[in-house]
Length: 124
Length: 124
DNA sequence: CTTGACCTTCACATCAATGTGAGGGTTCGA
DNA sequence: TCGAACCCTCACATTGATGTGAAGGTCAAG
Image (cartoon, rainbow over the protein chains, first blue to last red):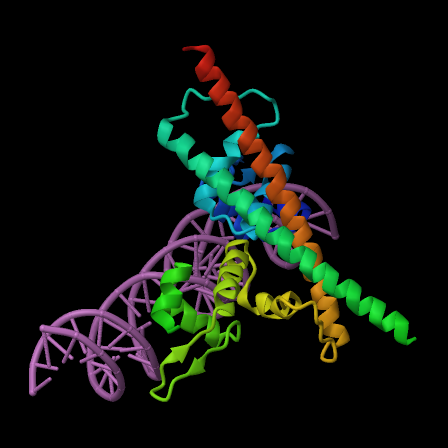
């Protein structure tokens, strides 16, 4: 598929698909005329990127993380330098912390909403 | 305490403490000479703000969420307009989605790291 | 052959969070 | 009384993720 279709199917502006490519997060083949072509696997990948960006991770980190997410459980660590592993461990912990924070606050918001709902129902 | 101490205890630049105040996320009393003074409760609050910012929430949303997190379970919904409740529900769901995304990816990274560690131990 | 809907690159703009520093007041101890 | 260590406001800079649009190439259908 070309960029327009990927854009539509992922709800992502073309501009950003090009940006993600520039940042090394996705790769696109090119048609003879220079148009980008994507295969289906890019669909999930783009959604993954968007989710992580929305969760506060910068593209720099997402780029490190993506190789860990290859569909086939085939893990290629020949390129796994110690520094990179340390970065990943760090980031794993930061993600865990984010999850904790989000969960705590999400639950508080949910409780609040439940309380409001109860209150309203009681007064009806 | 004054801004320097709060900054040190929360690991937050003074600049940002002033910024958070400007955005309505924290409030500070003032000494006669204009210096900001904070009480202990601001410590947790600042950490909470930082956590949420790090998790991708903008100050605009954090401001909406904070009132749900008052220590005492005393909830004051007199000001809870329907639009605000809708926003909160929306944001609650977005947070849930973020948690899902982060968890999935964090687990993938963790698995990857475990696999690398196993591999290394096997080759020793 | 032209029109419209695609695509390309390039560049400048914006927005939120943050950095940085100037210019200046306050407080306190040597 | 002077200097160090605080604090203030104001303002401009930067960074990363985006928006927007110009100038132009490609291609299929009328």
